[in-house]
Amino acid sequence: MTVYRKARMRDVPELQRLINSYAEKGLMLPRPLVMLYEGLRDFVVAEDGGEIVAVGALHIVWDDLAEIRALAVAPGKEGRGYGRGLVGVLLDEARDMGIGQVFALTYQPGFFEKCGFSVVSKDTLPHKVWGECINCPKFPKCDEVAVMYTLDR
Ligand SMILES: CC(C)(COP(=O)(O)OP(=O)(O)OC[C@H]1O[C@@H](n2cnc3c(N)ncnc32)[C@H](O)[C@@H]1OP(=O)(O)O)[C@@H](O)C(=O)NCCC(=O)NCCS
Image (cartoon, protein in one colour):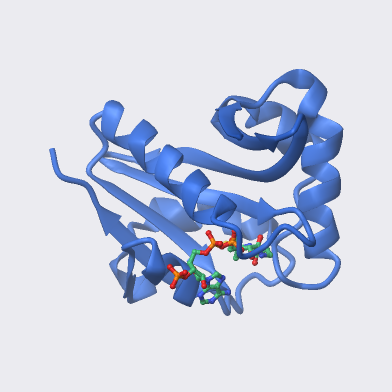
């Protein structure tokens, strides 16, 4: 049975291992340890049989707007619904907080479309979104795709 729960301090090494294994392949952005500790309250993990099989975070960015970031399913565990399940939990969290819109910047827009997101122009995102991009190795040549989900309230 899959359990979705908030991340705990002891999960940090596994979060870093998982995210940075994809970052090394250029599939995700790397997350230094300091960002994982500072953002730990944003993270949800999916556990199956006591093993972490997926991680992801919901980060509040601006008025009525949050971002799904650092979404990663463990290698070999893809295609079993863990990604969609985790996105669903993060959207529920946003809904509970009264947040109207959730976006992601991703190399996997097709997956997010399957989760109900729509591809949008990056120009539609507020300037605040780009504040943290200055720390990105790809700045200013962002090649990620923006996807957006509007929640019913
Ligand atoms: C992309 C990722 C999060 C998807 O998670 P997953 O658990 O493998 O996906 P799910 O099993 O929940 O798939 C849900 C649906 O999306 C589809 N899907 C999965 N990955 C997809 C992709 N890369 N492109 C298009 N569709 C995809 C599935 O086929 C499924 O469709 P269905 O409803 O028709 O059956 C996962 O493969 C992953 O962690 N990849 C490496 C890291 C990464 O790229 N993270 C995204 C950063 S934003």
